[in-house]
Structures are given as structure tokens and as C-alpha cells.
Image (cartoon, rainbow, N blue to C red; front, side, top):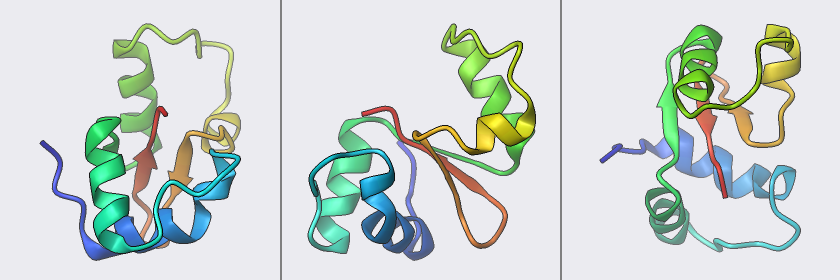
Length: 87
């Protein structure tokens, strides 16, 4: 199980519309439950994001790192990490 720190939770709360049409979380606790339920992953860098998608069988071979960073399920955290949420 991932431990989502305050930065992950706050960022997801503020940017959940990037991935979802309607809010799934109103507070940090709800955000954590949602992220746990969909097994969101915190990656240290874009290479880990790429490795994660490859392990999941996603066809991303033709995508640049920039395109990967812009994917709706990839949240670029302010500290340089990435939160991957497949809802």
C-alpha cells in the first residue's frame, strides 16, 4: 500500500478535475481513500512513470516523456514526483 503524503493528497484534491468529470473527494481523507481504492502510484521521476505503464501493459512506446507527463492520469507534483491515478 502506498503512503500518500500531504503533498500528494492536497495536489490531487486541487487537480482531480484533470482526470475526473466530477469531484470524488472533498477533503484529504476522502482523497486518500480514493487513491488507495484505485491503487494510485507515486513515482520519483518520469522514468518510473514509464516503467509503471510498461509493467501494466500500456502501449506507450511511441510517447515522449513530455506526452507521458501530459496524460490525464499523470499528476506532476510540485516537488518533481508524479502521482499516477488510473480511475
